[in-house]
Image (cartoon, rainbow, N blue to C red; front, side, top):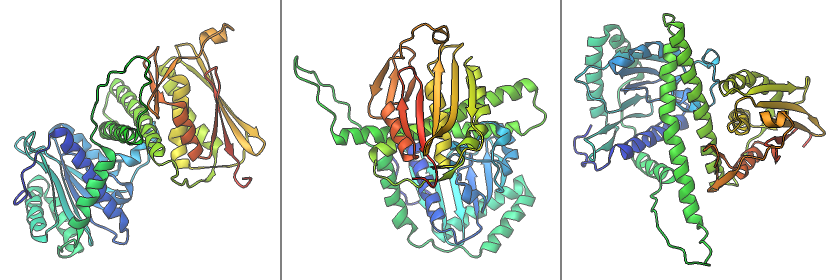
Length: 451
């Protein structure tokens, strides 16, 4: 694949960003044309294809390191990372995909550079990272002759590792027909990748200034703020990606029935912590995106908020128990539907619970209620510390603003969405936020059909 391609100059961190950007672009190209049903993909050293719509259509083969051969149970599991962002915390409730995915072990002499080959009737391409540190480069090739050579090597290797799967791959390729050029793929791929990288990871120059006495600090320009928000988006993306990978591997292990109970318990704790942080950084990403594009339209639909709260409450109670914080929920029966975006509302609700509880000391209590309030439903979260429950005065936790999206608790070091960012996110979901000094908050959601 590297033949005739100029030498690279990227380090490992930039190469990883190139790789994830390339994966997003390639999968977006596949998603644009959903008319071509069926196809196959081959990856190493970990699953690279992660869009649920594609996993349901395409047959996959993955060569993974020997230490990860337990991935063998992942043929029907949920994969990386977009479909995992809003997945339930309890692995027993995790959705499954009817994807066909086989794994084989990498050998000691095999390389560890990532590779993804996708063959469909209308799009055929291979992407890979290659080169030493400081000379890394992203490769994308779609020439039929080259792809044919790659597939020949893959089939040869598969015959050694699993002759049955080699025959399955051969038959799948035969059904797809002869390889052909993907047309102007390269003309679209590289400009789209450049645009995606430019929006995700801008160049940030740190400037040290010395303020003169009596002269107010200079307000950051719009360009500086856009750069800060883009950098925040990139950081959130970089954090969620490895966590999603870790959670995928953990869930593959949890499918085994021969693990000791203590090991299973530890793995479930790791899975839960990964889920919480994925959701948390997912909200940070959404908040930064909304801050940069405040006029982006929101598609609201009829949503059963009461049922959603009942479904999510067990995982919240478990999360709060680990912090030694009590949780009580009261949801009225027969509540009407509200207008919101259910796919984005679920992690947002978890974010509200986290916001109201993260700084609470052990022995505190968090109460959640949902009840009618005229043409709206009122969701209320009230937290009480042991001092407040003993009827002694308690000052609100001190918060320091860190840019337009984040705030920082100066006493505990806890990082969370700012009140402004939280309010904007809820507004995009149809809610109206009211913050209270006692660390409680109220959100009003419009009832469907009455606004």
